Length: 312
Length: 316
Image 1: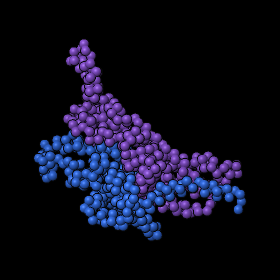
Image 2: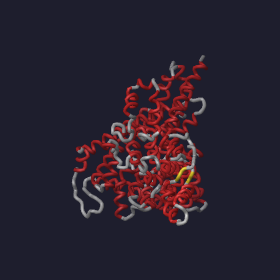
Image 3: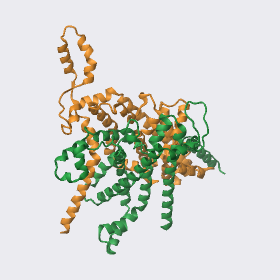
Image 4: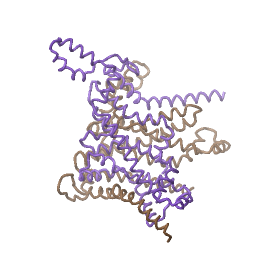
């Protein structure tokens, strides 16, 4: 070995050392710690703790509070993921096919991605305020319009008042979902717009020669297959982000759970148990559940992407 | 005929997109407009976008001024009150923004936001860039293992480790400190991965030439490699700054009491749920505007860079 390669080997070790120490200290050890803590009844400040086995997990899967948590979380993920992807794709296809003005819409749709979500949740809660909010005021002013009365829901609302979007437990989680979609679809739009630039235009001509004349046929035969890798990625990242929902719920509700705990999503539950109530064991078990969801998604993506590569 | 139909579809597309744009822009409109209006105008939803900007009486100012006004023995209390009323009259827009900055230490929150996001980004670069260089250009024992570690860590969501980190920080007495806000983020696994991918495209000859010139490995990292990676670094900067300026979850976990450490998203709590009658909505929306504005303005000025930076995670 030459002296140069010895010194470069030493430099290599020195250069990765801080990163390795931090990865271990901030990510890997805490992952082990959270798994261990989930088997205890540990709480901050108490001198000792007991091993409780899988009792914390037992609680999560038996008590109605946590069943509500899983239901709220899955509702949010299963609503926000497909809708924000669908809207993102739709917006990208429309914008891409415009002759002018596309840049304007792209800018507007991307604004919510940049904006502080906590601040915008508070703005939304004001916009949807039952009496002061612009949404219900505008809806109420439409009550004079004859044609709107044929819509049953609208007619009833005109007589009984429009919904408390945040305060009614039948609406709360859907309102949270709405803000999630509002915030996230612009991100997916941008990814799809990038994907669309990689569709070779000769393919469209070839498809047309082969008889794919309608826009739908061209989309099905050319655009969609080219966008498939983008879609695999977009689905995973949107689902993983959806599991992280926290700011909107806290921005909407002081107590962070919504009416009848209808918006008690997983990270809100973890924060409430682990930090506010100092029940670290149960909080850690919720964190492990969250980690499991995210890792399953990541592995599904990896295997789908790998299978695709094999076929190609 | 075809040309005609083409215009109809084009118009329809614009119609759909404009409808979408209205829904997307609605809260921004409400936020900006309400931050300019008087409580009465907000309550009755009148005055268009800017409000009438008629003079209004600042109730806080009246309350503060009252004892002083009545203490003036000679002047009748009514004149004093009238004088006070006059000196407390303000334009609504000014009132809202002045209240936003005076009722809560908003300036302090903004400064905290700048300190925290800047420290996080600088430390991330300091840790990630040398590591990325080593992983792409240096040969040493365990290199592949370290890279596998990076790939594994990429999969781990930070929220899952929040509780143990919180416990350790609490045990060390570090909650409610800048350190608690910054330390967990000093390692950006994604930053290492991104910079390594970028450095791999830099020809080895460049590094060899620098070694011939007698440069140390440390100065090669900063003086040779980093300048080649400016676009990647810029995109990463935007990615990192946007994420941490907007982050609410982590500051909420580790800042339990000390308001002087609050970052902007936490600062909004001060106003939340305050006046049910709409009296506080003006200042509240002014606060939200001040917090949201820096990134939105930066985005409008450098759109392409921002889109690149935010969608970086799309390039894994």
